[in-house]
Every structure is written in structure tokens, then in C-alpha cells.
Length: 399
Image (spheres, rainbow, N blue to C red):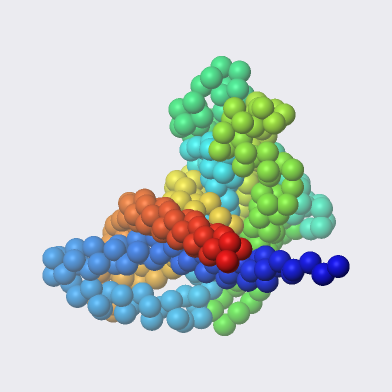
């Protein structure tokens, strides 16, 4: 009896697997390039637009960029950039967590202000050992932020109120609540203020977060908290059942419900987590710089966080670079109006940030369309190759 003829499918299958792996590697590499193309294109377009505006106003744009880059390479400029980016990253994480659930938490602004106010009050009234005091302020801020965001989540789930509308209204209410509480005799001391502005008592020494002395000044230790938040964000989204349910619900509520996900609970939980992260935004300024909450406390960080999250595509890693970019613009832009630097208008920084946000939306759409076209071409080429291989194999068998 003759031995069976070896089938040629095995080597061709191995070759096909190798080809597929190579194709997958090329595709993944191309995906990375496409992911980077949109923000890079947005920044380039923003630089071009701002250069034209500076030239129109009679200023040399190259001198302005030279001032910003020079300060950004100095040690004090680098420390300022990292300190600012810490706050910006926390703001972006708070907004991005809701975005991944397809929830637009526009109320980050009000959530972090209320959280900072209560944390400042607790820090001024309680003086425990630092190992207890610091976590106490962190937990206080996160609880206040989470509870305030939960209102919008409950309204959406049980009354069908859009979270965009409710969170915008809650921002106004939070501002009013801060005004009602930040008065002498409640959250502000009745006597002993050294200025006309109303502010809480300074937080205790044990409430202050550690910093690292560098040649460029104190580097805020709160950067460690930002790193922990980023790692927890990435792990939760990609390595937990909750993260899977969150992403699934964000893409299709009906499909998530069919697979057994409690959509209502996910909406409320996501808003609470987003608000809890928002509660941390004001703490770097409170615990490492000003040490009190006053009428001039940092404003606008909630809306800035939305811009940073958008530029970073709601990715924990992407938001790092977006936060550093916006921090670079703010820190170095503060040097532009100085007489020795040419008295450039500081408003050019706001123009650049605004144009980056606008351009990135356009750039993402262009890149998305290009990526879809490339994917269709690859699928077509792969199907054609498979058809050709099948035809060749059939011809060989028939021969």
C-alpha cells in the first residue's frame, strides 16, 4: 500500500500565518502613526495660524517661539511645566472617564471647586498626623466631587435629563454654594484676615503634600497622585470587568443591556467616579501652593481638562502629552508679556489652545477617513491574495 501524498496545505498555512502576522504588525504600526498624525497636525496648524496673527500685529513670531522654547528648556521652566501638567492631567482624567462612557461631564468645574472648598475647610479645622491628614483631605475632596456629580447621574437615569444640561446648571449652583459658604463665620474666619479677599483658614502643616527641591524650584509631589490615577485609569478600562462594561455601554447601551449590563447603575457609577477624580483637581494648588481656598482660587480647569482629554483622545498615555503641551503653553506663555522678551500679547497662548482644539477635531476626522480608506484597501488586497492562492492550489490539485 502506498503512503498518502503529503498535503501542501501545511507549509502554505505556515506561510499564510507568517504573512498575516507581518500584515498585523504593519497594520498596528500604521495605526500608531495615524493616531499620532491628528494631534501633530493640529499643533502644526495652530502654530501656523498663530504665527500669521503675530505677523499681522507687527510682531516677529519666530522671536515669540524662541522666548517660549528658551524658557521651556530652563530648569525653572521645566518644573513649572510639570507642576501645571499635574493639575491638567487630573482635569483631563475626570473628563475622559465620562467620555469613555459616552457621558459628557461638563460639570467638572463646579465639582472641583466645591471639593477644594470642603477640603480646605477640613484642612484648616483638623490637624492630625500627616499620614492620616493627607488621605483625609484626598478622601474628602473625592467624596464631595463624587456626590455632586451623582446628582447629574441620577437625573439622567430616573428623569431622562441630559447630563450636559444638568452639569452645566450644577456648575452655576456650585458657584452659588461656594459664595454662600465662603463667608465670615461659616467657612471663612470672622477675624484675622490680612486682605480684602475672603478665604478659608490656611490648612495645617500636616495637610501639606510633600515636594522635591530642585534647581528650578519645588517640584510638586502631587505628580505621584497623577501617575497613580493614570495607571488606575488604564488598568480599570482594559483589565477589569467594570472597564469592559463601561466601554461596551458607551458604544451601545442596547447591546450592553442584552449582555446583562445594568446600564442605569453604570451611568450613575461612571458619573460618581468622574466627579471623584474631579475632586482631586484643586488639591495640588491647595496642598502645595496657596494652602487656602479663596475667591481667587484657580478657575477654568474643568473646561481646560475637556480640551486636554480631547487632544489626548481620552487615552491615559495620550493625555500625558496633551497635558504637557498645554502646561508648556501656559508656563512659557507667561514670559511673553515681559518687557525684556518683547512684550508679546499673552492672549496668543489662549488663541493657540483654542485653535488646537478646533484643528484637532478636523484633523481627527481627516485621519479617520484616511484610516478607513486604508483599511478597506488592505482588506481588499488580502481577499484578492486569498482568492489567488485558492485558485493556484486548485490548479495544482487538478494537475
